[in-house]
Image 1 (cartoon, rainbow, N blue to C red):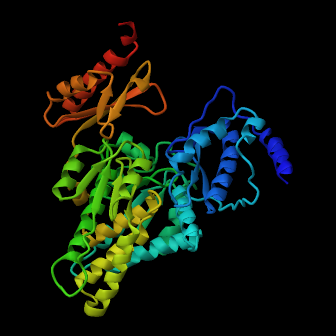
Image 2: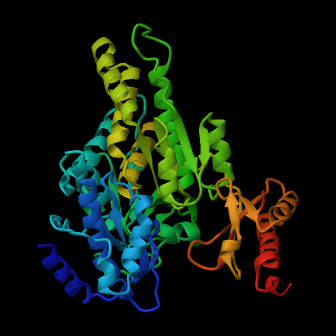
Length: 522
């Protein structure tokens, strides 16, 4: 049997030879490249997924997506049994498997994949697949209708728990969503029909012939800070949102006037702040003094996780709320891993990718606490707070950032607080910032520490950056090497846009002096 399988694998792998002169590396987006050179990688990731499934004796997922990139720029990645990303321990093996140059080399280390079964779940958002893999391995119903039912019913619970004194203006339960001409827009058309307390208008749903992520989507809106295609002066004052192509990112925006294409952006940092504020409020209600006979002494450890790219004003705001803020290197896998160390961990990147994680021990206590309160004080504010937190844990996709579930949670919280997008956006004022890229001879010459905010090498560069940064009020600046090209990225903040631009340019010159092409001749 093994000989027959080996022969079949040799034959089939020869149909998908790897591209010559190209070496692929597994990262956050899996194997990412132009679609024209990914056939071999897709075939081999199928083998890798089968091996991972057999090794873990669990269901795993495979996703092909352009994500927030142009339609020809694709990635293929594995969803681990937890619903999260592929274990980092398997990434080197993935690289070896995909870059093996001959079928015989490919066979090396693969003893058998007999027993693996492939199930085609059709066209899904990336977060839907993560949710289904997680659900299947938990013994739950893992279908698209089950996904829609869980997030829509959890949203309804949160709406039903809005305090009686809060009056929701019918004009404020409307949101206009840019679907990036991707799969998220198509799925949102299904979800909107399951909701009675929220009116969703979907544009760029992919059904009108628009090109994926072309002048649309969360990445475009967040970086360019202009209206996406299909939005304009008629949308002044409306609450608007953008998904990215595979619906794992979400940002909000409003159109300030009919004389400009510019927008007031509400990015992932503001979404994180809204979530943190709401959850902290519910925890405070739940654990406040009262009903001392109950076993309510569980002190939930709530933490917020950001990267150095988070706007400094957001970090200051979160710390003013009394929250613990932790920084990690750039990359969702780092954020997710750190957030999982809290009873409730919230992470977001400014680009709109993030989620909330609840520990099993906290959820077990919360269920017991809710049952206890239902017996002694049903309908009390404390019990409502417990129910709200339980609803959030079911609405949010704890496997990965999910634009659809995050959209519903944002809308539920805004209705709960009776806030407009403008009031939400006034939580704090972003510090002006600037990002630049500097071409260098060798990006690996830059080694960073302290969540990528301090450059250890080359010697002397961090001291030079610190001296330059000290010249600017509220100045902050760091450099980090790109993960994909020989450039060093510069991020700078300051009290004014002019100052942020000046700081970024000054540090870019320092990088060029230390690492640029001119430096090699020194």
